[in-house]
Length: 312
Length: 246
Image 1 (spheres, rainbow over the protein chains, first blue to last red):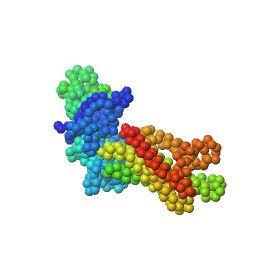
Image 2 (spheres, one colour):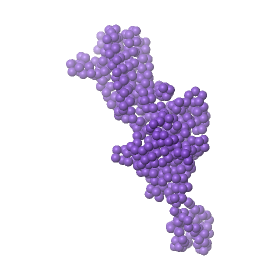
Image 3 (cartoon, one colour):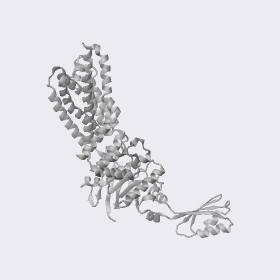
Image 4 (cartoon, one colour):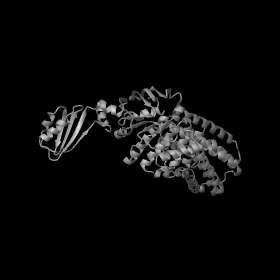
């Protein structure tokens, strides 16, 4: 795939504290690249350097093969930025905000009118365009925050945790919008510490922790690479009378937990042992009410990589 | 230039939508003139003179306080985040701080010029047509004041710190300059200390135009203010760091 943005050996120190340690990655044209990591991992620092707001100690940033320092104005013209904090004038209307921020990219006249109209419609705020931002809900402000970033049709949209502190409905709306942006040909660099968002929208994922990239790939690849276990959840009609030893005797079973009607079994991945587990239950004249199996999630991948949960 | 113009319009709009800034630059000044004028009316031969004195004194004080408008416009909490979005755009850093200086300057100048008109309507002596010289002198001083406010923000990276230090500096200057009461009759030391205050120079320059019809101080005030404005703006260019906005 064609590289839109390329980062090489990016390093940032705050005094003696190294917050980014020689990270390298690229953003391909048309993809949604998710930068995933816990708070303090270095995501926002990376974004702020990419946006030219923070100076880097080392490293090179190329946009379409050209160093951004050489063509900063052109580079910024092609970016749309959705910051983590709401960057809106509360006393102004949605339209005034969108109009002002879009005009900073040189749009004027009918082009500006059309761009603002399109962005507000995209954000689902066309009917509230005249209302002051301070009367908006948190979700609506977040949507306007995005509208102001994309109205000038940027090539690359950089989103720094754009869904922090909003309700699930608004979050779903925003995630849907991001997929639409991709369908419209935009490239998205998205940082988050919400695993479910990454699962929902990412084309590719970079996991970052303590200023280092610790894994990179599609979500399927990451799961494939780091998945070593499978979890079965079995619900019986009556209280379980089978001793745990019986399950441990089955090949691949690593852990068994029985509580009343419920049995939780963790098994080594790749060993097809479910039929033997069911046979064992039948042999003890127990009847199964429900059975589910759970594949490893990105959460387990992250836990495996970092030794801590994402929101620790 | 288009970018700068857009930011300037927005900054002006934001200033004029801020009731605290408007009240502070208008009604507060009028209230202070009325209170101080009334309290000290017995100290003057003709009662109205105390109002004439404090109208000019608080006009000068208000001009210097324009620096506080600039700190608010540049780094106030609710304004700072949208300002950050300007820095994401291709507009460039100069547009950001220079538009804040210009917007604060225009905002303060419009309000203070309006105050002068109110003073005239109320019969305050501003020297008849010589008020035009006062308005001319106010221009570069207002600009320097706004540039000072933005420079303090650039140096201290924080609106609260910049405002606190500026407020202290302006209050001391106003006290020494005789904005609240003249120090001229309070001994040699205080009188000499009064001479170091820019408020004193400005009050003297304004009174010179109003009561003597003399323009002796006008050119020095204008030229010095332009020089200081250039230096302060250059200081902003040297000390402004985008990181401070994060």
